[in-house]
Amino acid sequence: MDTKNVIAAISLSAAVIILYSLFFAPPPITKENLAEKNKTEQNSDAPSLDQKETITEITREEALNQNKRIQFENQNIVGSISLKGAAIDDLTFKEYNVALNSEEKVTLLTPRNTKDGYFIESGFITSDKNIDIPNSNSVWSVSGNNKLTDRSSVKLSWTNDQGITFEKEITLDDKFLFTINQRVINSTKKEFDFYTYGQIIRKEIPDISNFYILHEGLIATLDEELIEEDYDDIQEEKFSKTSQKGWLGISDKFWITSLIPPSGKEFKTTFDYKEKFRANFVGTEPLELKGNSSIEDKLQVIVAAKRVDVIDGYAESLNIDKFDLAIDWGFLYFITKPLFHGIDYFFKLLGNYGLAIIAITFCIRLAFFPLANFSFKSMAKMKALQPEMARLKDLHKEDKMKLQQEMMALYKKEKVNPMSGCLPILVQIPVFFALYKVLFVTIEMRQMPFFGWIQDLSERDPTSLFNLFGLLPYDVPSFLMIGAWPIAMGVSMFIQQKLNPAPTDPMQAKIFMFFPLFLTVILAPFPAGLVIYWTVNNILTMAQQVFIMKRTTIKTTT
Image (cartoon, rainbow, N blue to C red):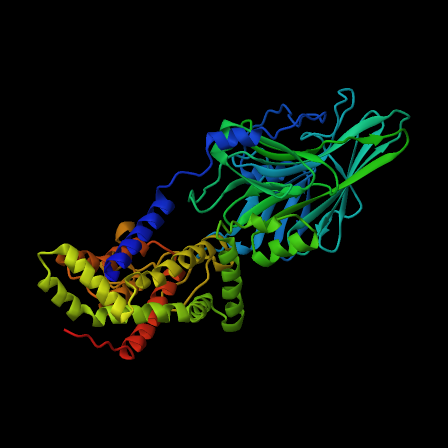
């Protein structure tokens, strides 16, 4: 089998698979899978979180000024907690801009009576319909400090007409963690049962990437099982499961809103849609509140930018089971996450993620150096054998069987494996996918510049051949945005293929000549960091291949 044909077939197949999986492949979750998951739902005596409410939509600014609020701020976030409902419903990330050339900061949470309401509720509920409990219309009072920071907590309270007081003491760390200590004080002689709950509500589906390789929607790890439910799945059918440990939340590409239930206590998690998306948990075992006594519980809320050090740090320090999966590392986790840490190491060393990608490319080439050497030696021998192979084809052009026998005898005599040329391609495919995943899902790469015209390594090269890379004063359509780095990648691939054995079949030769152009067009919309990796990898491959070819000689007999 001609090595050139094999490489061409594998490379073309890989490119088609990449293109299909990114733009056309359907979501992997099926109705049957959802039905199977919902079999895990278990009955519980805990009351429902459903609440009838009528909301008139207003602007965000009007909503923030409508009720009294507790302000909060630390080095990373700023926002407020509404005293009406005691909901965390206003949060902005101080370090992240909406767009590369914008000073507007990313706002995640917003009040319930806005069009895109997104907020967090918590507290106690009861199945006793004769007891008044605080709801979204209850106005809480503040005791003592009236601003929440990483150095000062706030205390909220609400008392019903039946002699029961509900309290919340909220603390904030220096990053993204809210800790809510909840307490119920009974000043009567009666006994009651209460259940802890936490709930995230989102009214609308946000702008999402809608890529097969990234989950955006409702997420949890429950008893070590990762649960990922898309918005449209939950609109069709709710998900529910009772667990002993875990966490739950709503995940965006770069942001996570999550709840960590009280540790050591069983809870029921529900994802559903009732004119709004809800991710909530309710404790399954009631807390017994005796007369003239109190009960308390603690839950944690993390509303974070999905920085790897932050997510992993919380997973370890708070002992949150599999919280690192809040970042969608994908099925190549064992490659993707180490690859990120390698890039991050070189970034800290070199100060630029583009240089870090180039450095990790060198490391990858070095790791596979022996394998590539073996492959390139075989390819060099194949190229050296081409005159002899052409002679055999002319000699036995009327006898295909005899030709195959002679070719196999030649391979055996010269110890050449025509399949070995596939190895570099096969090795590069998982690394390619893993690096694309890193660039796509990690916020560390977001809006990170390289040199020259590349201002964001996680986005495509913004230049185009069709306006001479910005020299001509007009914009080109997106499908013609073929930038300088994709072209450099295509050129390097064209030169590289000249070093390989050429197909003897004219049609195969034409197809193979077209392949670098094909990949240039395919990879043009990909993140610039990925194209830089591929280009540098091609250059290093050529250098290694030239070195091997110069040292490889074959003597053949006629």
